Image 1 (tube, rainbow, N blue to C red):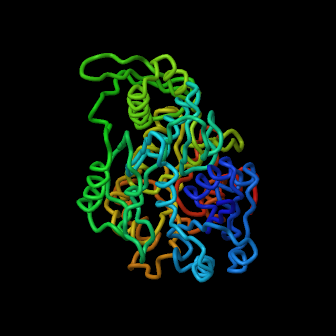
Image 2: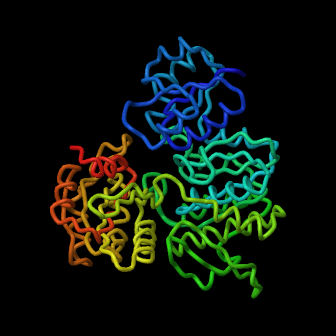
Length: 436
């Protein structure tokens, strides 16, 4: 198989797998919308061309394999339909990832929150320890590691394991069930994706099925993180297991939640025989991933940080980290809700998620392409609910209003934290560059 085409290649999971295939020696192309994505730089560095969606792409390229995601219509995307008509092999991303992991010692990292960071930590440790593992991680570039996908010569494959379904409307298999890990790392389990999981019990059932496919499972119940402290943009902690001190470690990323993520990464790497010294070196080399507490720059002394947090639990953890990292600064949180279904289902959690922010600015809801109903909810609904628990909440529907609100009262002691899974991704740089 020489030519592989990715439909929706700008998605973080797709881009990572595309990079893996490119490094493995395949001719890789992809298609997507023209919007700016966090993966644009990744695909450019990997020298992977991105075309506009068009069924003629299949005719012109005539790939041996087409890989698609549940986004952009999934199996109903015009390019996928054309590939099927031409009898070209077509496979969803989750299944494709599971197939390329076969033959390697598999480490899968699952969880409602923190799986991207934890996967990247493990990859960084093993890479710096000389294992040359393969990896596929759903993010943009990883500081201290490089691109989010890598074809390694070693016998280990580390992958993020996503609980979302394979192809909404066609294949409701949780994507991680295509993986069969030797080591399964589970960061936590929370209710999310209410469009496909009706309750927390349904999410837990999916994770339980995945655990039955694993030879060994590591969770946060297996250790304790103690003596956590912060200083000089560092997080310090001690890892304890069964009363035994496993060592003191240092991170370049903030937050108690990241110390726990690191604890999981440490135990996974110890299972593989990595020394404590090498683990400590690899962790210190890890500088974080794109869109996870990513420092963008400063404007008139105020710091601008971009984060992917789009669930109440993630917002709480991110804001707690900001308070720990910047205890003497004013935290100004800007949140763009993502999908009507998530906002409505998790509204009570969102209402109480902003306690560590001094000021909260809420925007309109960024809808998924799969959603066709507002469910009677809006950004203003969220403002009303958050206002019941926070004294300084305001509504700014879009970028222009957010920028105006931030800049009219800007102080050098401000930390501006933009959060969300929608197009808020590009706002931080636009504010920094004073763009409209």
